[in-house]
Length: 152
Image (cartoon, rainbow, N blue to C red; front, side, top):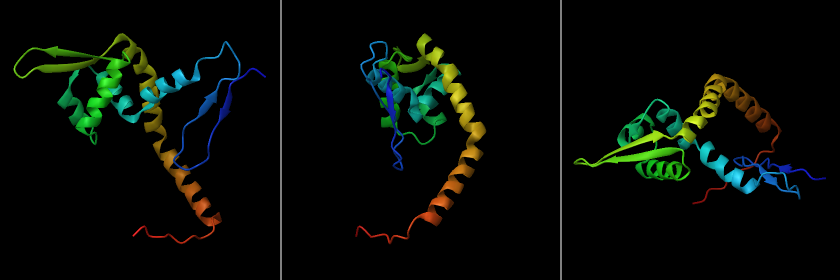
């Protein structure tokens, strides 16, 4: 059987899917694909790519538009997106220096799927929340009562 096998975990909070290569020379290198999907599937990357799809932006403009991201996380995410060839960083030698970020051709190519995924999430947000509430109610009714132990 020369197919990639998919394994998932049902543990709460664990949403990674592991694909293992099973002696199929035609299959993709799953580790490389996984690394790429981790980068482009990261919530900050998706938001940054979406915003840069509207046009080039300066660092503080991106930070202001994307609420809740720390300066450090924005710096790291921008650096990683640049490393992956999805965005470009242009420094204009002024005082102070002006730094603009923009999507590259590869980043613009990714914009379509990212926009579609974002739109799907917005459209189905209510359905997902309702499903979570139903699941949590059902799980709570079936799960045996356990007392919480304080870590203090």
